[in-house]
Image 1 (cartoon, rainbow, N blue to C red):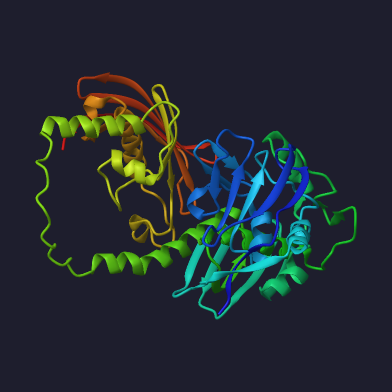
Image 2: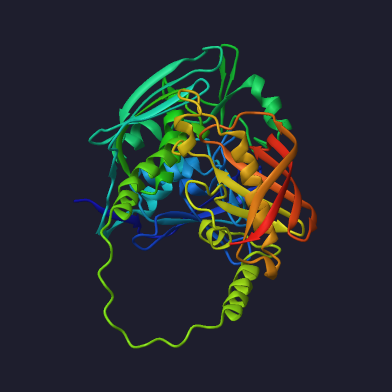
Length: 464
């Protein structure tokens, strides 16, 4: 039985971030058993940490971004691929900027760092998850699936929209094959994309030193291609990194056609949902607890008014300017529960404005019938998400603690783009009016900075 592993000693590297262009110093630190992979922003107050888990993914445009509270890390896929591919279970990646150094655009330098540090076994057993049932996702031209398999295998086809440089590769991925067949593959882009990327604040640190550029039928690179199928192998490298966000190794055969970070991360979420499914079923069908053993009499409960005051104070201390809320804190404020809780976390509270986040997973109950083969999040549930986020903001006032926010009406409603599985919905709400128990707010839902819906919502606060 294989045990968990971490590095024998810290190891460091410095360079530029691919998209930010920032100079960054990175140190990979050993970590205790059970820590998993996580990032630490040592340049921010309190040195906040972000676990490398799919639930913390907030952006997937051209790279994978993790966020937690006010901390954010861009382009995590290459360093996660190196750690996962080499079999590192526990490590903390310390950074003094918001993006790891890109090095040469592959994971080769990171693998060299890991090999230079060496690995050490840790007592707990490594517990890969064996995929139980097939999972299939389609997003535009992208198709990605995972099937039961006795090890981790990747099969991938990549091509651009015009079908240029179509490549195929398949590999049983283990530490040896990872080092030999995948980790050297560099990132690449098409020449016609460069202007768009620059205008959108990306690839500020990009050059032929850390990327391959394809122009028409020519390949621009400062060295010969490292593999005949370097482009598809880099896509597979990205999949290894994004699937590390499952939080444990997996045994399954991943088959991908034109993969993307968005689809990769959605597959990671779907695998996590499959892992949790037996646990949820066990909780649902568990026998009732045994009768409690007689205990000494408890003190008399506090008067209702005192209890309400205590609860109000607790909510008010959570919902305040500058605060961020994880899902457990959200559930302390809102009475909604799965499957009707439409807020996974709150990332900003500032005056009359609040921003919530909803990770739209393929496991959402409504996708089964809305619509089969073409899943779209119902617009009315986006309105409900706006009302729930507005309800959280109203809990800043102690007298509103414990109340329900009933969605009453919506005006000036516009649905601009469909919301599909894998999207991360940012729900921005600004309170415009509050009179008595009636509140009005302007709500906007975005996916990767693009507005997908907006409305003026009205809701009423009532006692539970």
